[in-house]
Amino acid sequence: MRVLFVCLGNICRSPTAEGVFRAHLERAGLAARVEVDSCGIGPWHVGKAPDARAREAALRRGIDLSALRARQLAAEDFARFDYVLAMDHDNLAAIEAQRPASSEAVVGLFLAYAGWPERAVPDPYFGDEGGFETVLDLIEEASRGLVAEIAARLEATP
Ligand code: 4NP
Image 1: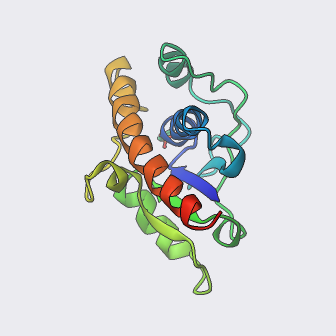
Image 2: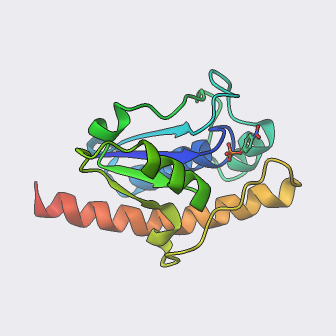
């Protein structure tokens, strides 16, 4: 199973989702069966590590994002990943616009897995430190829901 998280720059929200979701998979004993990655819609930060504020906020919860590097969403991602999950509605619209008709990936908003089908992870880039804590809280909640769904799918197809 392969999961791709998508935001605008791939330096704040989606690398946070990648790190947090991987930690949840490890806790559930599923890390070896699920591949996780993240990318951005825009090209501005390609090759860069996550924003220092995102790294520090994640580290306070025991999650190290320092090895991650930003990349852009690519056409191949739609064939490779089972889930392509957007942080907000703009990301989702951009994903849908690039999605090939042949793609069977589940495309949607990540926070739907927290039971908030229309809610976005707010972009923290131009805000203060508190925004990064909110991002983490929302992502932790959605990670729990997505781990549960994937665990059920993996159990159905051993
Ligand atoms: P992200 O945050 O999409 O969560 O990585 C942003 C990072 C950079 C920019 C916007 C959002 N930017 O405009 O450069």
